[in-house]
Length: 338
Image (cartoon, rainbow, N blue to C red):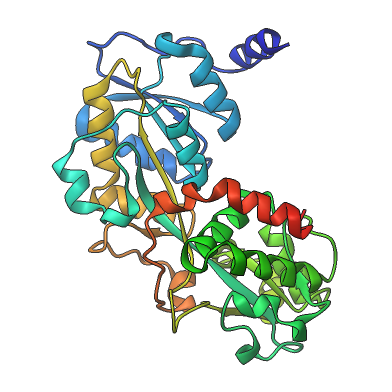
């Protein structure tokens, strides 16, 4: 079955990626699917003369493809979203360590590892129904487990990487016992069984199906920037809270990538990763999905993000989000957070 699946996947993707190390090309496997990335890649080619051959797909499919291609893989760089997925590539032994003064100087230490780097940030915020919930009731992630919110919490699946990474941060900060109590408290507060994505949770909060939910900021910003009257009206009913401002700060996740161990164009791969840390690329990379740059000196003009305001971000190293992923899933499973 695996061999058949590989054949089908190969047939659906471009077959002519260059594998010759002396050519000015970069073979990119990407799980990012944003229109503004076209400008990002075109700008790199214009600056360097290096052509980008790109295969896009879902994270797990691309990782499986790279693993199956082995030493013959044409892939130079793997890009994806979420620290857990980047860590999975590391655990599979797919990434190569990268030594770069550019990356070390521009990307904060907590947002990089030896072999993969964050290039944009997103935050996990609390959204609440303005008519049904008082803002002072939902100032922290812990508040979501408070019995006063019984029957008022909506969520996507506990097995989704966004929630697993948040749980991993709770484990890192507070330990397993408190993390498990938090998960149990949230399950007890469910308005309905977990389903849908973050946008669905925001819409459920606006509709009064539940009073409170979690969402990544780019989903909130996307709706705030919408020109559709129904979505503008929807967002008038929803408030947004930056959790844990008095303590650890709001949980941060990332979009990022690394050079593959078998990359045939290693020099081009490092140039590309360094380019992604440049001012121009940081603006493209972040604003394309309503996120923030990781390079602190870079400013992005995004009215929706500006409307959300400034906040204190959790400075937990992104590698710690991966370290506790398995424990996070086990805790959610025991709590019945499906």
